[in-house]
Length: 229
Image 1 (spheres, rainbow, N blue to C red):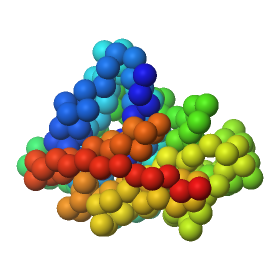
Image 2: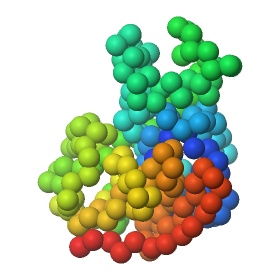
Image 3: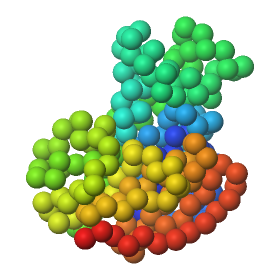
Image 4: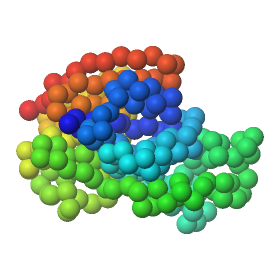
């Protein structure tokens, strides 16, 4: 069984489908997506359709919550939250739902109920195996996962080192690596490789460090990371 982590998708359905086709997760493989499925890229709707469909099909899939999902849900709560979300990629997300890209006042009503249900109830704040911790952004290294706060899990940027007290390797996203390469620091590896901005979407085999990448141009490549100490 492989544990396969996929970094920040941000509306990039083509690269997501390319990775799933190339890596071909087996029935007993576990796929962990690290959050930020929405905003910035061209097809938020398509990405959420794909993830909802995979869950309905019974695939072994754990979907973490990212800060962009937090902001999208908050956008329904008040005008200020909506303006903030639109400024960080919500415009592109809504454009994938609204015909003719007409961002009218009630555009949020175009988002299907099953997408809201997925964002509200289908995501988890973190995931843990015997050897790895999976989070969207980061962890407070002296605290168990159940004790983490939202600032660390969803908003913190990658530090110079992130050695969790459990000794487990942290797999995270959130901090965009504009080089397109995974970033290894002592105790952690970040696989947000900036797909929406011209980089790559990364799928990492947590145990071996082997990774596969696809981009919006249809290119593919692969490599391996050497985990930090």
